Image (cartoon, rainbow, N blue to C red):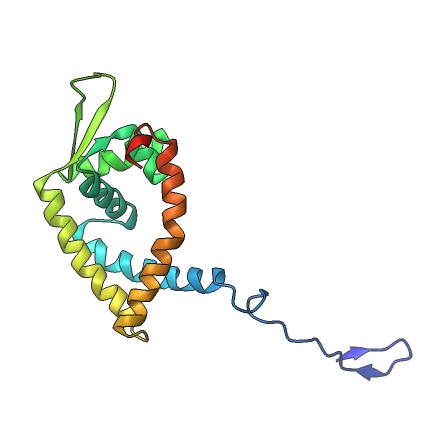
Length: 172
């Protein structure tokens, strides 16, 4: 209740605003919500394995690239030099990756997944499949496949751009 200038009271109605002030059919807020749910659950299933989501992403890239230079990994993960060194220090201390000097250029470090890292990655991916089942449980198999295809299509353009900026642009 508010008081008017002449001493009377009145109630001001405030129009209700949507939770997210976006035009209909915008995906950003929904993607953010799903991402947060997956991230929170992922952190809890990765912790017993001694991993964090950023570790998992790095291990996945190293597996998929069959190893790569430290600089290429930093570009792919969009991390600066200091942060990539910290990440690799964590992974190396856990015997999940190995860094060695490149025989062609001793200034470069080559980073590869160890056997322990490959096994830990498989365990993590299995645990994360359960997280996806939990978070995306309202979608049937075909809907999940469609969602995956659309997200892959949306990200492939940005990944190709990053690849073209990398040192091995011919591989894109």
